[in-house]
Length: 462
Image (cartoon, rainbow, N blue to C red; front, side, top):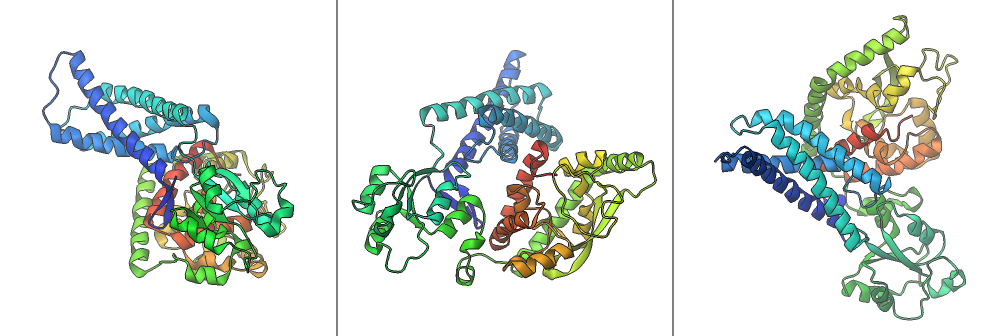
């Protein structure tokens, strides 16, 4: 099963097809609900066909985006089937709320609440039935079958990298690595490579050989390419499947010669307009939440301590700025002047602070940093100068994350738990490099949609 690139970000083709099919299902459920409701009262369906059709398209798009926001277009279901069913219900209900607001844009169409409610019920039933049917007919319908060439730590890392439900069909060690053929899933290299691929029904081959000089079966690899089999190197495999740029495989020539890093003036202008638009929308929608949060923090401290917390962070091009957040820790959290990483169950976090960190409400005042141009809505997390200085001395390429503005949310924040150590910062750097390399407005939109999943399910917060 192939992936395709949309604005330099990889998307699984079967899941895009699934999104399209489910969009048609949502539109069909709406038309069915409309006709059922008018039939139940013995009346004719309104004749505004163009308006109804337009609304059905809008409804389908909103529901598909809601499904994406709940993580339902990922190849692996992290919480199993019951978790997936819960996400489907939440996604459709979230879409229904958005549609209830959007319905004011279609005043000429008689869209009763009963029609929307019936659409929700039919949509949930139809989508659950569709997914159950596809799973029963072919459990691995959304999985890509991958064969690994090579043995050793690199091949084992590829074998272990299964974040999106890949089906790793086996590992083929080279003749020089025959001594390591006791690796689980090992397939003897005793026949042509193309024949092994045919027998295992693999869709692609990952060449996981670190020292390739004089070892690769070049002619057989060319035969595989001629037969339509995709051949990948490990760095490209990890970039596509895990959304990371692996530091232990990174070299300057790959960075210089691979595609990406397209940060032209027009791209940056569009990103700035996008930031301002999203920030204004969030301020309009969330100011009551921010007001209640400020009041809760003030009450907890008996109006003796500040509601907001300012801290110096490193921004674009390594320039410092003051980030603004709701205060979630005690005012004496760093009374000795030593900067510390926030950790899980940190005793310095207040009761209100624990909730607002879990729901990411503490980050909302950073919207003003975005409006000032110090941050972007989406980008790498801004770190403190003390941590940046230490990490930049120890690790190559760390400064590369400062080529773009830091963000209120970002790819690393979505894909990796809250960082509480230098090792965590290093792992998050791999995701930040992926974002810097593959940035697009599309990727920003995707991150914003998936951030809803993080907030609803409380992932990655401390």
